[in-house]
Length: 101
Length: 421
Ligand SMILES: Cc1cc2nc3c(=O)[nH]c(=O)nc-3n(C[C@H](O)[C@H](O)[C@H](O)COP(=O)(O)OP(=O)(O)OC[C@H]3O[C@@H](n4cnc5c(N)ncnc54)[C@H](O)[C@@H]3O)c2cc1C
Ligand SMILES: [Zn+2]
Image 1 (cartoon, rainbow over the protein chains, first blue to last red):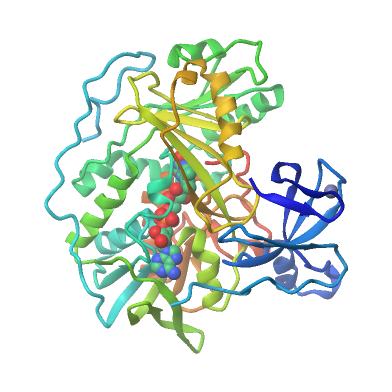
Image 2: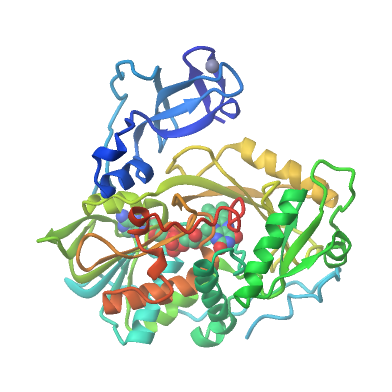
């Protein structure tokens, strides 16, 4: 069970939240995009091995969405932050796109 | 060679003889150092990668092949899964590929000359509400149109097949009926991998464990080899069959795939007398259970909510699953949890696999089997081998191309895939 720091309610059990995958994916103008870019917007989300900035919603609490840094290997929790605010620095390595030799 | 002595007639329970496993040959596959170059390198030594190598050798006469595995053979999802095999999926495309696979299972032990405890004991999928019943019946009619054995059982018929099940109306999720696929069943997962490894090795395939692929030699958008923890290996063609690590490898090769990696857990009880001779699944309450060859109850849980590569999941997921299992099978309250574990499953947006060509020439991918690919091991290897050998997909995996996410022609199996397979 993760303990997740909701920016509004404080530390709560993971079971009070729903997951929203990669954070910070802007909603594009569908008419301005090529089909391939639209497909990418619809279906592709970051899936790194390491730190990931991701969305969570505290459905059983304040009901609000926020963003969180979390490590997908160690399950360490980093800073939480509100949407449309400045993203805090990643607590460690990000963008580790593949296994290192 | 389909094993029958571990299979009681449906609906019977009782004591079995202690199940003896057959002797293993002194060596299953040759231990080799990687050569400088191969015609084909398969990345990932799980069941799907090994089956791909075997069918490349057997069906296409290509044997200058290496299977490169970063850990140990079948240490990924292949030997972590609950081994449920069935083909009663909803859409025509899925029914075709899963049924092809089931047909291969039916002769696989003879074909490989290796026992795998494939046991067609039947798979029940329970319905717990009016809408659940409607969905399951719709699935049943779709199966009938595709010639797949599948029938509707009333709660009383379910009880006859599975005497320990609770069909009382007086529970949170009452059993309103079930679909039943008699040809479905289970197999012994590590033996499946070993059988394919042995047969592939006998045909000349090199199986290289403890070697991680860390990058690709790509020039002019064409793959020429893989970089590994043991140096660079040249390759005419490369197949990525890496389950939960597929999106990382795709990124290394310069393209993206719509895969999210999540933990999926399972558990076993200690060895018990035979009480359950059918596979029972319930998507609605997140339970799937069978009793394996030696007598342990094997149960699968749901996926964790978030992306992870940790190969372990939250305990609350297990608790949730056991609560539902105890209501369905009150007798299980006397059993203990011996062991729990997790695998990292590769989930695609439509819960269907991605098998075919990639934006890089001579680089092929087979991923996205997610929570339910063990059953597809033979069929997946078969069509992947065809795809690599010919450079174009087999009829059966054409619909599962990566470009379906561009065309929008998704194959949504969230319903038939159930919670977990
Ligand atoms: C708990 C659980 C229960 C399940 N239950 C069922 C079920 O009942 N029925 C069913 O049909 N399916 C089930 N599944 C799904 C099934 O296990 C998988 O879909 C299937 O086994 C995938 O096989 P694979 O060979 O593609 O993957 P894997 O067996 O995971 O093999 C992929 C291999 O690639 C290797 N690899 C990764 N990256 C690299 C690299 N960079 N270099 C070299 N090697 C690499 C990994 O080490 C791994 O061994 C379950 C899965 C889990 C986790
Ligand atoms: Zn909150």
